[in-house]
Image 1 (cartoon, rainbow, N blue to C red):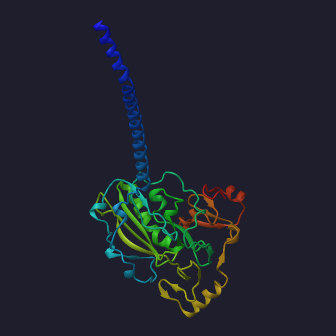
Image 2 (image 1 turned 45 degrees about the horizontal axis):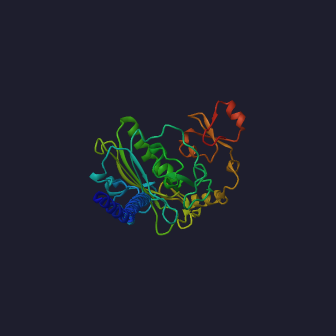
Image 3 (image 1 turned 180 degrees about the vertical axis):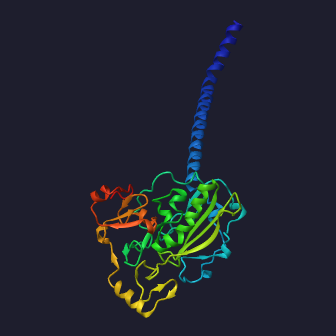
Amino acid sequence: MRFIKTTAAVLALLFLLAPLVGCAADKTENKGDTAEVTTENVAEATLATETETEVETEPEIPSAAYGTGFDYAAVPEYSGEPYAVIDGNVPDFSREDVTVEEFEYYSELDGLGRCGVCAACVGRGLMPTEERGQIGQIKPSGWQTVKYDSVDGNYLYNRCHLIAYQLAGENANVNNLITGTRYMNKEGMLPFENAVADYVRETGNHVLYRSRPIFVGDEPLARGVHIEAYSVEDSGEGVSFNVFCYNVQPGIEIDYATGESRQAEHTATDGAAATETEDVAAASANTSSQTTDRSGPDEVGYKYVLNTNTKKFHYPYCDSVNQMADKNKEYSDSSREEIIASGYSPCKNCNP
């Protein structure tokens, strides 16, 4: 009888405690659910933070893209030479810049659509192995399609690579192309670019290279390009220069605020003032020489430019013509079929 009473008391106690145990279980389950949700939220928040950080991270700018030794105000006025030597021809690279690790860097366009400094460590691995493509679709700041009879190839402006295609393989890169005169492109920049390319190909060494267009105020057309180079493995014995290439064209006056131009009233010969007779003759010969190209190559006065060395033929506006030595140029208004029959093949870039 006592056992039955005791059992009944225990059962009654359990009956009273059952709701409390259930509540505790519910609370435990709810607590678990809350912890799980919180973990998911934290994970999502962490992912969002990491994603946001990745978006805001800016690309690293190599130290070689800097340099503090250039002052445009100290550059002498153009006097007939395509470039001026700066700071004794010693490039302004620091010890931190020196590397044999190949890289290339191109500044983003500024708010006026103008290019900035470009830098590279040029080596064989960076140089192109394919032919250049077309860049006619690029219109750099200050661009105008203008022709003069007095300009080699007629076209005043070229699309100039700040780091030449032959050095880094960058072609239709808007951050690497500026509006430059034919004179600056060919007489100013090209000899230095060739020197670097030849050195790298011959030695397998590396060259630090920096190219910076110089703009005045809000002008869309650069006054010139400051170029520096330094061969790394031999501490500048092979290549070392610091020059400013003038964005000018002899005999042509340029408005850098607009890119517009006109035939100069007085032309110069070999850096000296021309005689009055030469001035009159030049003015007479070029009275109607400035034209704007609106239609195509036939407007130039000849259909094709032939390279007597490579045996290829091009449209006059082809960028390959800009890189062609004058001695190898031949101008022709023959038909395409006649030129091919004479042993020439069409350029793969402009597809004449």
